[in-house]
Image 1 (tube, rainbow, N blue to C red):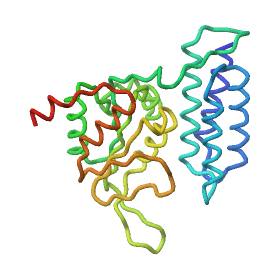
Image 2 (image 1 turned 135 degrees about the vertical axis):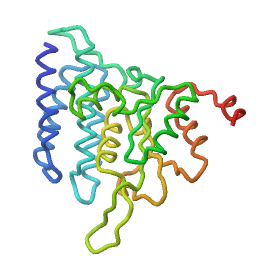
Image 3 (image 1 turned 180 degrees about the vertical axis):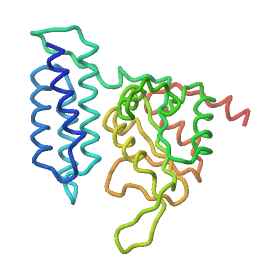
Length: 251
């Protein structure tokens, strides 16, 4: 039974990958299929409420369905697949989905970055000094996997840090160009929010880089401020055991 459900959800995941902004009708059809599977085959699951939250975001968005909504839903589907792969094969009882937090590795921190290697290395070194393991995607073995497959494999962590650095430029038509994060950074940010929840992800902002202005509730930490203490506080909120007293004594 689990194999059948995994195949169904994998097909849905592939459909979501191909979906484009504005295709709201198709998105709603896919959502209904996911909700049906969730309610029928998962017990004590928060998936239905997670999906409803995403739907509310779509309805509240001035311009409707956006890529970030699709990415968040992809994260939910991926966790459902993970639950099925970890559960005993069954044809009758519902699968008891564990809370997302119980499956996250709180000894590791996933770092999303652009082309600013100096900042990436500084953040990774600080995470290492806190006794945690920084996960940087391009440093992980690929095994001939695609980028999205590597993200799925290595993002089962308790916290994600997204580095918004002005590696690109962009603007609305007719307006002055502004520094922007690379598109892969924005994509992975949305994917992490969908997979490990918004409260377990923060963005570190460098210089005057443009931020997504229509996403509420995202934690932003400014690199120009006291970012180390701010980051430690966010890690503690997410359940990480961090003792930074000795670290700051050494500094």
